[in-house]
Length: 403
Image (cartoon, rainbow, N blue to C red; front, side, top):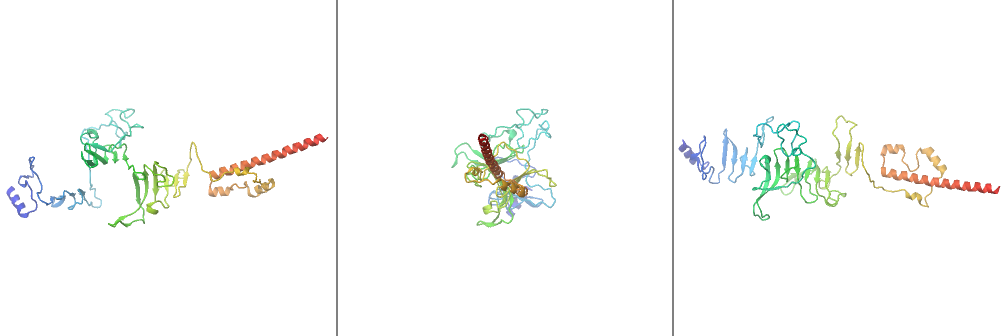
């Protein structure tokens, strides 16, 4: 049977197997020098149910579900409508038997919730070694090496995407180093450019100012089209950016050097900047619940609050102030004119009416200046009245002396 298979393969010229005569479907013993595969530029194809499901190209590209992989590894699958077929799964099995958690239902440790699993029967709190306690050590890095890895057997990652710097290269001279690009730990902690993620998602951005560490968004409708020499279809996005380091006036004229920022854009302005978009920070509510408020910032930076604002100190920039009342050239409205104005308009001169306030709202800085102006005018009225009283007293005393 072996001889017939060997002759058939040689006649067809399909695959040149170096040890085809030793390949048994029931198992093989392969020595260190024996090889399985092709010795020329032929591909190695694996067929099940008469379908080519796995392809190893002569250039080393591996395809699963595709006969012409376009990368070192490519997976292609087309599930039928309603199919439960999965694409790519990495599974780490707990082979220790019983759970090491005392009460995993009531103590969720996903994403770095605790340093180490608690032993059976131990209460989650208040053990100082196990629960996640704030503040904790935020030290982290992105590099490790093969001889002294960062993780022990209990913390080995289930997914690790990394680059390798050999011991001696153009830019590096030292032990072989692995720089982490993405890592997923057994507890669900995921790091991007972080080797030891400190949370469910831990992202490290660039040190270059004005470069975002994270962007969350969706396609800005109406901004797409072919772009670049390859005609790649690209578009701007309606997005929120988190920027760890800012330059002076970075992204916005109010930014100072080394500030950190969060910026939003509807993607419809120049170069994808914001045109008319607004940012809402509010609790989610249903049925238009009027008791639920929040904050809304519009495209000009104007902020609208629905709810109480509590602050220890508040500084408001003013457009004008009222000390001009004390200039010698300033003239107070005569009392009779003031009396007639109040009778007709039902509010002080220069003070917005009730209708105006209900329609346009209250400008705190403007109202503070108006109120001070009225206080200063009242002070001048009192001083003028005091002078009249003193003049009347002097005239009365003079009449008394004449008698």
